[in-house]
Length: 112
Length: 112
Image 1 (spheres, helix red, strand yellow):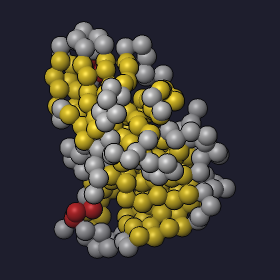
Image 2: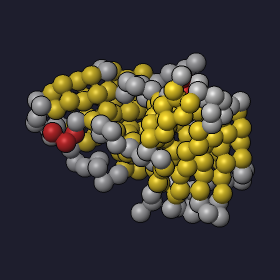
Image 3: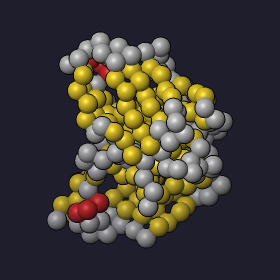
């Protein structure tokens, strides 16, 4: 069945450093890959997404890269700030549907 | 910014009781979803709903679960006879044509 693997499960970085979270997916028909940030007690919030016809997308301090051949996609956060601390989930849209398969999440801690 | 609203934020129920979780999707959205997240685990797809019918459901979404859009604004998830393992955060999401999801803040269901 469809699966998304996410690494690492926890990540601590010093404020100002970069953070990278990686995901791999199994469904070669997946063509949409959103990233969600979840703060304590809140629902997942879409922070950036990428479609399969694009290799990279950037929005200020956040970027996402996609390697369709290897079925990898990654989230890059530069100049991290304490408010970036949260759980981050990657997801892949199952081909032919609008169902998402989520990764297991990465707890990012930015140390001041 | 438009929001998906979920009520209640926390529900405690006795095992075997019925619960109804309520959601008000964004008004111009056409596609509706329920996901759940068991504590510390990944977000899992339950069901998608479009044009007043279920378009897809997961193996988790058995006969004990049902969804309804009773009045054109609310979208509800009913669990007929709750089990201990139904304890989780339940997230409602909606989307317009072709867009990513917007999630609500979730309902924490605790079955005792």
